[in-house]
Image (cartoon, rainbow over all chains, first blue to last red):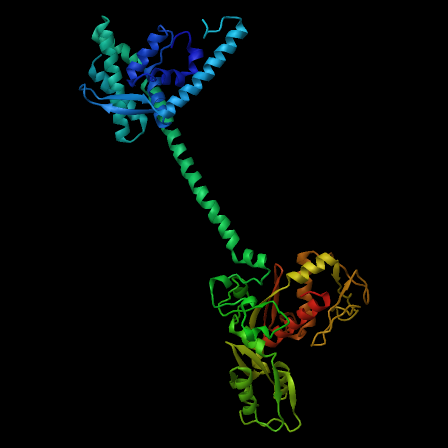
Amino acid sequence: MGRANSVAKGNLDLMVLGVLSDKPKYGYLIQQRLNQVTGGEISIAPGTLYPLLHRLESEKLVKARWDDSTGRRRKWYELTAKGQKRLDAQAMQWRQMAQWISELLGIANPSTG
Amino acid sequence: MSKEDFDRFLALLGGFLKLDKKQRLMISDELRDHLEMRVEALVGAGVDESNAQQQALEEFGDAAGVAARFAFLSQMRTRRRIMKIASISMLVAIPVVIATILFWPETRNRGLNLPVASAQDEDPVVKSENESSDAESADSQGSNILSGKNFRPTGVNQQLGVTTSNPEDLAAEAKLELPFSVDSGSIFQDVVENITQNVGLQVILDESAKDTITRDTEIEENFSLHEISLRSALDLLLKKYDCTFTIKDGMLVILSEDEAESEQIIRVYDVSDIVEHCGASGLTFHKMKAGDGDGRFGKQSTTTTSSTNDKVAMSAGGGGIGTPREFVPNKPETVQSLVLAVSEIVEPDSWEANGGSSRIVALGDRLVVSAPFGVNYKIKTFLQDLRANMQLK
């Protein structure tokens, strides 16, 4: 991870669920998407990402399926309804928190630009 | 760095995982996909393959660290499963425990204020007093006695090492209170037939009684009884022949007094009402000081006389002959003092402490007695008198 590690550390679940919110992805794509969105500032090591994905799977926040159609065994993850609910709830909390922090720091509300 | 390095890394990781083979293979496949994708991306970015593989592995971190994260996850999953099973078990166990407590014989009987017999509910043959027959209802004094063929007060029975009584005995015993007459000049066979036909009790003449009584034995000319209880009639009649009677398997057995001593019957007397009354009213039992009457209970102002003419010393608020030793009538002490009262008052010579064979112990608010039929009867009468004195039902 990059400089934003400390902020990201407690929010990895939220970030991974967020990455999966639009469509199913496999581990490498998830990692790349996080990299891309944060401009390389936040990067989850594979050794952290995969155990996290397995945990989200055991908590039924994501579900997985194997695909052999490309000639390579690949595990795809997608958000479950429970995962979507969790994402929505955490996203709301995050926005609220961001707003409070912005106000405390005297900066513009991020949602209003 | 080559594909073999990936294999070695994944094999090493698999070794650390300590998961079943299927899980290890799935994790290995998933991570291999990632490594190969990363190598392809790096090679596509201009990194030579060897360096790309090296970099891909370095980004992954050390195999032990990755394995530890997976292992932790597996442990958490197992723990969650155990917790789930434990929760389900508790949900199942709690109603079972509650049901067991509610339906445990002692609990149920206490709730209904019935006498307690630990094995009573296990055997439908054993009847409680409330279930007694019409004949039993003749026992109008309400003796709170339990007895049963299969009544096995575990521990008590083994401890006393005597036979247990038969539930049919209750019905037979109740019939002893029915009115009975003996005509002078009749023979013993007439008495037996009278008992069988008019009272409904089968009579057995034990071998031990045959030394003094036969069916042809003539009743004395001046011996005539009219409409007294069968029990009293038998007491008066059999005493003349050094005999007595007992109830066994629902039958009236006539036997010698010596033989009767060995016919021990276990009975449990519910004295909870007496104990409760003593606690509520502050009644105390007094024991005379040594030298003030053989250490037995003394006569008090509220003495109740039983049929045995023995007297129990109880009074409200103390007092009494001599210098009484008072003790707070808490439950165990009250029961213990009842044990003492019974052994001091009812057939004192029959108790083991005095060289006899009868035994009495307190079990909670019950008296457990192993004694011949006659002694048990006197205890029953004694307790009835006590209840009458206390105005208890």
